[in-house]
Amino acid sequence: MSSTESREKRLKVDGAVQISELHQTAEYILPDERFTKPVAVIECIESIPCNPCETACPVNAIVIGDDITTLPKIDPTICTGCALCVAACPGLAIYLKQQHWGPSLSYIAFPYEYLPLPQKGAEVTMANRWGEAVCSGTVIKVIKSSRFDRTAIIHASYDSAFYEEVVTMVRL
Ligand code: SF4
Ligand code: SF4
Image (cartoon, rainbow, N blue to C red; front, side):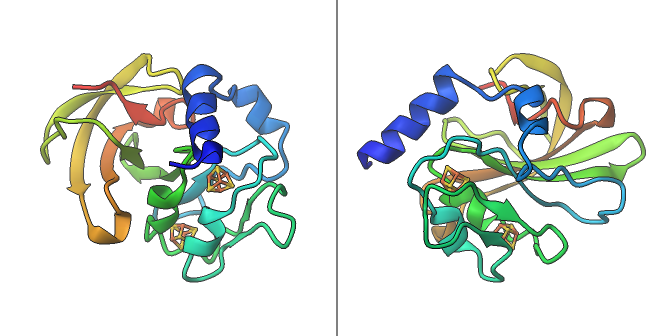
């Protein structure tokens, strides 16, 4: 892991971003009720030299540009929800989200680097940016693919009342 990647990992663990900070960032775009499929949400507000999200996206939905300290900007209208950027981000700062996935349910796909992995159908505890329990959730699928390197992507549904708050699950 490069020093930049290590620094980003520490930022995520030690100084998770506040929702209020995200709302002050023009690049933060949370999909709303118009979106009928999960699309990428980027929570990257540190101007650090990094761009794997941009290079991973096969449809150029994420733009950083020549100055790689520029914050990534996503166009969710062209995002296909492939999750390649979710796995590529060393800061674990990208998720797929859909606000209205089912009756009172939201959908999330998030990177998960711990073992054991949850099983499809498992009831889990969804968590916020500090790993604190928020609500219950149900695992829809767990994807481990060579395209995602060693990062598992957990897909889950949860109470849409906590749409923005939830970003991961409590470790098993
Ligand atoms: S989910 Fe796929 S299509 Fe959407 S921004 Fe990420 S890499 Fe691009
Ligand atoms: S979203 Fe992830 S990959 Fe993209 S610039 Fe931020 S930390 Fe780097």
